[in-house]
Length: 100
View 1 (cartoon, helix red, strand yellow):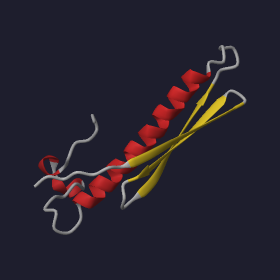
View 2: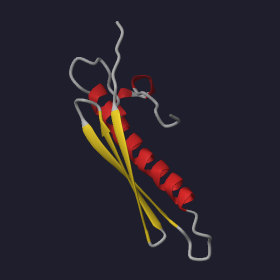
View 3: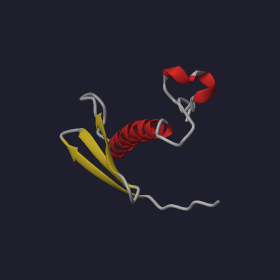
């Protein structure tokens, strides 16, 4: 059985006084979530906004990834899935997402 989905994302970047803040909004069609990230330019460093954008965006996407993993693990524990991802599951019952 094939499954095709389209998730929509919006990335908002704000820079003020050598601090870049990023908000990533994800809409899966059934769930909406937001990831946040910031980057600060050290006072002795040259202010290169692109670097702050990249670092803050990476942190926002990492935040979103953690949220997605929590939802996936929670869904795996749901009725009818046949999986247990909690501590009682043992190594064979868990999906290892640490390296993903």
